[in-house]
Length: 289
Ligand SMILES: [Zn+2]
Image 1 (tube, rainbow, N blue to C red):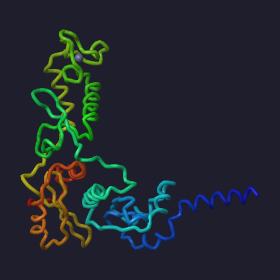
Image 2 (image 1 turned 120 degrees about the vertical axis):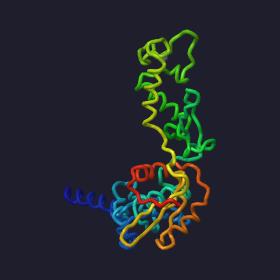
Image 3 (image 1 turned 90 degrees about the vertical axis):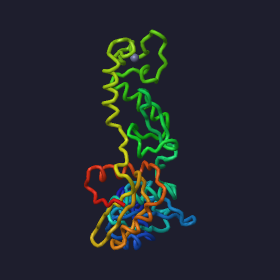
Image 4 (image 1 turned 180 degrees about the horizontal axis):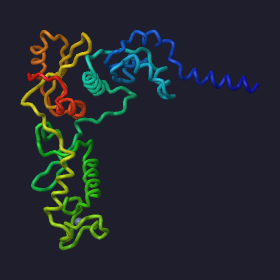
């Protein structure tokens, strides 16, 4: 009796995490190569989830690690995929597809229309917005944030860590001739009460901010970033950290890429996150367009 019960429990557990029969054949046809995959739901074939991998089949098969994923697979009617020639292409395509299609089960990516940063203006840090300022070309921006609140919180955290003065930073109004609130608790090193000079305070601030600096787009125009995977070739067109699309035929790549390069390109936070390292480290194959 006890043995039967245990068997039944084991059976149930495997059933829950078994790959759904209606998807098994389709998974076998997914290539073991880089790209983006989409789980489509019953209703209107809408995407439930969009993901990326350097090995599509392996990644799609691994979506069965917990009850939530098993449930997602049971709700999935079919799986589609788009090949890319490498990891960067997969990351760029995934980010742009999630932004356009907003699948139900992807965590909400940061909405670029709300993007904020901290800018030094006349010795004071101000919260600035990407709708007012081209973040790709300003050399004096620090940090990327989803809201004014999170930008100010980052500044408070930095001040706490470096014992900077909330008053001097404009985070707290100073009463005339009085030190800031945190100076009394020794959490401010004392720029507000002569405990340290403004120069020493500001040097510590700039040193800490420098690690958060937003990198300017380092080219005068658009570039093509080339990826290859066996026979596959892609040139990703990017300007101002914004992904404008990819071309796949190496023979006509530069000419086709130049057409894509004419599109408008403001600053894009996803593109920035994906492309900073490969571009600034010099490891990527880059063509100036
Ligand atoms: Zn102070």
